[in-house]
Length: 321
Image (cartoon, rainbow, N blue to C red; front, side):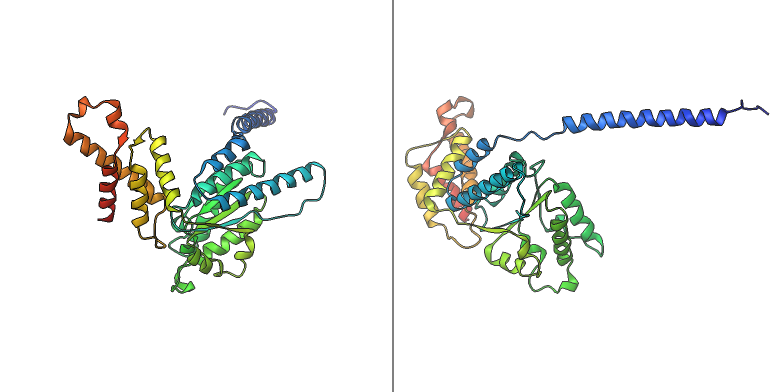
């Protein structure tokens, strides 16, 4: 039988300890490098504010966002001067019909919070009911906690939040209330690392906010998004054309105005979504028109960039159909 040298076990253990310490040092080096390399790069606040200002309409919304940013900047200066910091919630409720810019504003808010240093990452995690509510007992809390963990140091945006508490469904038959209860707890646990923004139709969101006694008090502000006016919808369509390198021919502005005026403005009206869909359908109609009039390979630049009033009219007829 081979006899091990005296002290072999001690030397082996010491060597193992040395290897472990070396590995730990290497891990710390890698962690330091990762922390440096993964440090988020935020856009300057002025650049984000310029994008906010460039949005069509939403003047009342923009004013509320500006006032909130000023408050947060003053709060940051107070902290720099060693003054007491009053804990305030930045969770928000966005109330508005579809296509009124709620998701866009939530994304810009997340960037702004990151730029001023209120949130480390300033990213937006968008979820709906399917991303929070499970299908069996115990699954919902785990899904909600995963969504919160992913959104830490950023904004958790819950669109159509009222779907978490559907009307006419008993609490015992739905796990949405469990998601709300878990969310409320995490909003308090991670007050300094998480902003929750919930959005949806005004009427249905009122029911959602009343579904749990402690829910409404967690949100510091409710911002209402008005429907776009006809003139604003025309401006949105014109901006879509410019951004996509298209030109609207003479008469298109008047055609757009008449088309938007004729659309029924119920709660389900798509606002900017309708304008985008109309524009995209007009591009299809333009392509069909050009293909019918001449060989596609012979089209000049002006032909392929110009949208005519008839393209818009045919697109609207298709949407109506």
